[in-house]
Structure formats: C-alpha cells, structure tokens
Image (cartoon, rainbow, N blue to C red; front, side, top):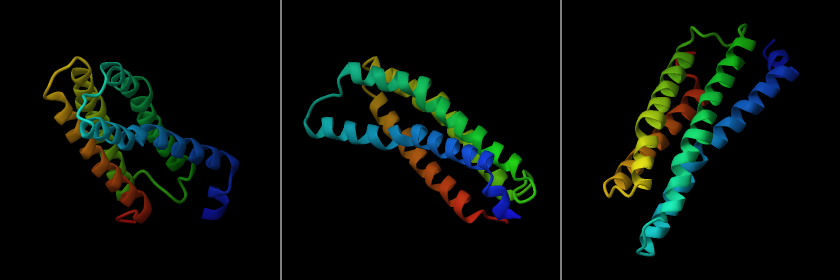
Length: 151
C-alpha cells in the first residue's frame, strides 16, 4: 500500500516540489556565511550592494521557498493519509519546527540582514547567530524527516 502511494505521479511531483523548495530555502543558510567569512578573512566588509541583495532575497525568494516547502510537505501528508497522518508526533514536531523557522527567517534573520545592508555594525553578528540557529533547525528537521520519532 505504501509503495502504491509513494509511486503515484502526483505524490512524486509533490515530493519533487518539496525537495526543490527546501534547496532554495536553505541554500543561503550555507552560502552566505561562506561569503561573509571570505570577506572577513580578506579584511574587507561585504559590499553594501551584496548585503542589500541578500536581504531582499530572504524576503522574495528564500522565505517564500521555506513557506512552500512546508505547504508541499503537508500536501504530501494529505495525499498519503493512509500511511502518514497529521496526528502522528513526527508530523507535529515538523510542523512546530517549520513555524519556528518561519519566525526566525521573517522575524529575526530578514530584519537583521536589512540592518546589515543599512550598515549597522552589530547586525553581522545577529545574521551569523540566526543563520547558525537555522542550521541547527535544518538538522533537527532532517532528523525528524528521516527517523520519524514517535511513529
């Protein structure tokens, strides 16, 4: 039964969209710290044009991709309700982590990136901290998705 559900075309399309959205949502969480470290190592601040682009992309690309990753994930749960259910604890944990991630991206990281783009000196540390928190949450989400605790 599980094989038939996850073998359906619709489910595979939803899974493809889910994974693609995750890649788009989390790419900057890994690329931006590398860029920042390279500029720091060179003894230069990140160019203001680059910090403005990164801040804008959080709100226009990466944040919305994170929203879509959750929507597609929950769509997959809905499509496979004979196997995965919204009442399962791993789904509830994933839902909670997703909301925390959304709060960090839109409520903390995005505003910190905007302040960094405006030249606020303390903002780079906040961006790094919130980025690190997103790394941790991403790891926790992967653990939840792979091991499905409480199942």
